[in-house]
Amino acid sequence: MVTSNMQTHTYLQETILKLFVEIDLNLSKPLRTMLSSLIVCLLENNKAHISRLGESLSLGSASVIACIQRIRRFLSNKKLSPGITVVPLIRLMRPLLLELPEIVVTMDRTDWEKRRKHVNILSVAVSYKGRAIPLFWIVLGRKGNSSFEHWKQVLTPVIEGLQQMEWLSGMPIHVVADREFASPKLAEWLKNT
Image (cartoon, rainbow, N blue to C red; front, side, top):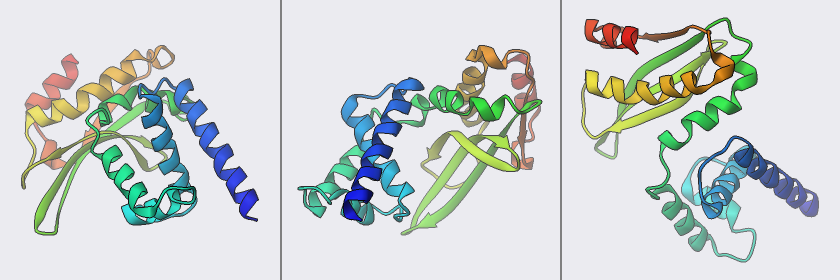
């Protein structure tokens, strides 16, 4: 049973690595390998907690503490950002997006307090059959609403990424959001963009 699980784990990781190459995810080989390892751990129904992921990765020769440190270094790597994944994610979603009569991009902001620190995230997603598939986000280092400049910051990479796809040419792109984002400036910017 352990050998079978290990073979499945290895096969899944190799498949994810091939997919990264196929969608042109611009990361170094060590970063792609670590990302694929973490994805496999999450797909194996592990909790998204550093210590649990460290335990899952430590099945080889490395200690749990060493694996946790590797994960922390990976997550704090400056080369990792939502910006590098926008176009690869759109490529990956091609079969889904081609089914749609129009592209609906949603913008939302959520905030909460964790350990007496505010977490304020502004995100943009593609709507697919009632689900939001995140494409880009920023974390605001403060409490409160976002600004027009923040809206442009999160919408620009997504809109430009969608417009790069020749297979989406001619498909209308609509941006939807709640009343926090009601702004004539935003409407004018979207019309011109």
